[in-house]
Length: 274
Image (cartoon, rainbow, N blue to C red; front, side):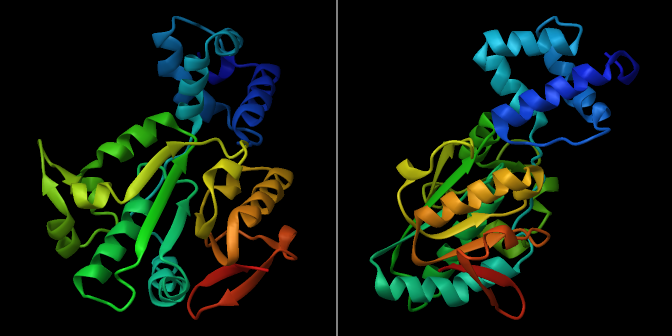
């Protein structure tokens, strides 16, 4: 299938289906993206057109999930943007550790695991340095829409190219071990700090429990304004009193300003539950 073979109506129909299934909004003129990401799935299932694939998605939930996996953006890196991790470690973790025997963290768009594992490594470093709050029990839940990236994250094996995106040599040697080829696996002591779970952000969050901190970064940009507001409202409901929310550097939560108090940390921003 080529761009020329994809009609505007077929493209719009697929966009509506994708948004209904996942909340992801593609927008206009992304036909090339649909074709490039779905071509292999279509070949594997011997379908030649997008309508055929959509019909198969309706009949086969595994194909539906594979299509969602293919359309999910999984751009990520270690300690991304840096500031949220410093704010968490230097300000939030000591505060929550004083008032609770366990601190619960949710990485709501965890991709292949870099964000939750970065948090786990940061916590392990605090324990290694015997910092005052290091003895508190930490629970990290990591969720993502894509079953494929969740399975990758659970295994915790990364090529050197991915590790070079934010991981220092010091932390690499301390918390990873070399495996086959040019790949390294994060050590079990870090892997067991994180619980991974497949979750569509359209689903209820009620069964996840309450959290001290939620990282929902660099995912809201893919959703409609209405869905963003819905997600942020439901995150507010699962945050503990004085809980904190981090979003991406280019993301705004102005549509739910009555639910959160913005706090400037110089540098960086965190949103506290009102």
